[in-house]
Length: 411
Image 1 (cartoon, rainbow, N blue to C red):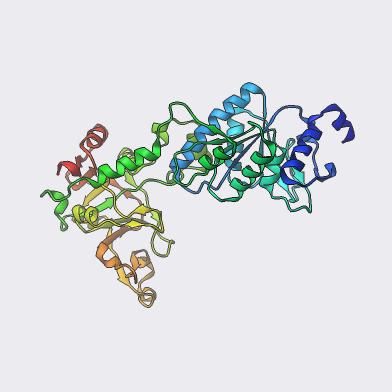
Image 2 (image 1 turned 90 degrees about the vertical axis):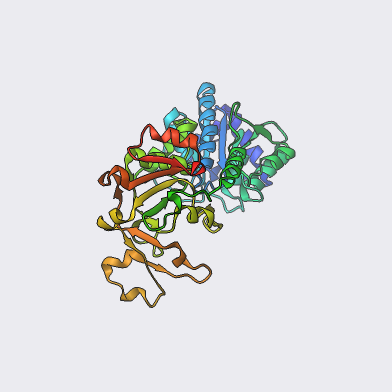
């Protein structure tokens, strides 16, 4: 190890930076692998707060990651990431796609099968993996930072002690984002030229949808003929899409491909001509497709924002199926009851059970369910209607739909 110190001055420099940033000096013997400090290249750390399941946030983060990978490849730099951190899976896949060498830091973990570049750090000091990562790295890129979190605190610590232009934070269009505060502290703002302001677009779109008048007389008021299935924006991977396929789409796809709004979900349904069953029943054990026997106008007029799931319970996008045709293929009304009711229901009908609810009366939904995916090709052209919010969206869908497409704004 002493020989490496003489050959590579960066060895001492990185340990010195770690001491300055954290106030703690580590013995070189704490590092199980010499790979981290035997490389003379620049080490760039990638860090992020938890990303959750928001596909819009994933797309923005991946755009920054992809641009950074291209830059690292041009500079022949080396990527550094904390093992088991929020960004590790995406960073690993991005490094693989763009052929960037990457080192994972394992802090106080037994890792019998480390890769060539990986490094384990064993220390009884009170250092988090974020502090170690940001202290050791030559440069730091934070692709998303939540306010008042551990990542934000570790970045503040580095910015105040390092006092250089080596820490960047991505400016992402998310309401909960600490980028502005970190830039005020001394971080460099990281922008992508030509990027769309997705958050402002979302707010404008919400106002546009809220201005639609659902009072015009039309089929949307008929509660006796149609079952309504409203689509919602997709969080995470599409049904049936693997994690790696999702990561590749986010890292390599353009904005038009990677969007997952309620309209995008409907386009996918029309293209595949299939409603995919998901396990979203009250017991979360039965894959179902849900419908409402309420009129479309009522579904939209009485929709409520469900804060516990972060979405509206109805959107002006979806599929309407003729009620009698739906009944013939096995779609059945929900059986409402309480916890004492459920054990009395036949096993084959358990997917139909729904608790009446205490804070909200779920019987008002007049819900029906299919216990499997619904193949829309088994319906005739007049037994299915596709609905969207605006006439411009309807025009886009008509070129790929075998069924009538209408907009609620023109009803």
